[in-house]
Image 1 (cartoon, rainbow, N blue to C red):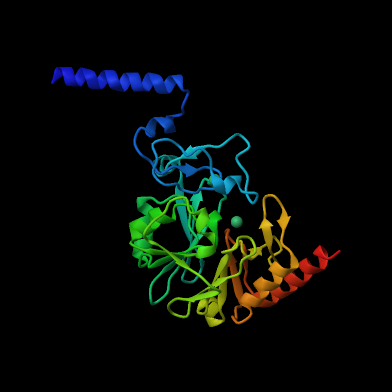
Image 2: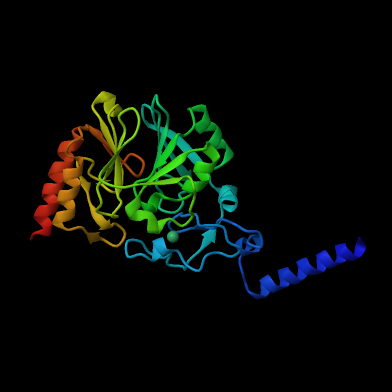
Amino acid sequence: MEVVRRATIATASTMRRTIDCLKLSEIALESIIIENFICMQCGTQFAESAQPPPSCPICEDERQFVRHAGQKWTTLKWLATDHHNRLEEEAPRLLGIDTKPEFAIGQRALLLQSPGGNLLWDCISLLDNETIAEVNARGGIRVIAISHPHFYSSMTEWAERFDAQIFLHAADREWIMRKSRRIQFWEGTTLPLWDGLTLINCGGHFEGGTVLHWPAGANGQGALLTGDIITVVQDHRYVSFMRSYPNLIPLGAAAIHRILERIEPFSFEQIYGGWWKANVLADAKAAVARSAERYLRWIAV
Ligand SMILES: [Zn+2]
Ligand SMILES: [Zn+2]
């Protein structure tokens, strides 16, 4: 027994020395255990591995960027040691959830509470016990639907904990870093759900870029949840449309017209974007129309 114990200590200290030599971080020490690493720049959780992934394809894509200080990884467990989630109503039956201090791209998810079941629109990286309890107290999650890969974050973790399905547009399947049997791909331009909820493929920022129509939103006048497929800008009377926001890559006229065509059959008074208070709260359909007209005018100059 003593021999076994000594051998264990020797192995552990040898391993620690080796790791010291490699100058790996505390997080890498953790990686002796298989982990689902999370990219600190975009917040995406990856498939299990013993070491952090060599790179993050989402950050290396032209629409994002690698941290200026270099690629860095964390895990859900590490993230929970100095971050927590804030839950706050964005609107009646629409609960915003984000992480404090701000993490990754600083987005907020939205828990849409509907009679036929709750839908989590977009997602964030951190999921802790307090959040699970708060969401369960509001009826849990039936389905997670996500606008585009910048919000995939820890979607599989959330789906597992809430026994939920994930609906993603098939055109973006290459950007899934942690595969799951819970992910269901949909194709085409719309996917009707329950209680009149509809996923609409708009493309643009990402080929599979999706918005959600919520007919019961805005007191029955309808609302769109858009992430940054249709982005509410600082002037809340307007929205915008970009291939990349951090790198300022615009979209062409055909992409703008496609977005307009896809949302045309739906009526909505409000738009809820991907960040806190980034919302158009009145006459939102007209706001999209005048924003598109302005955008098309300026890219034609
Ligand atoms: Zn990343
Ligand atoms: Zn994005």
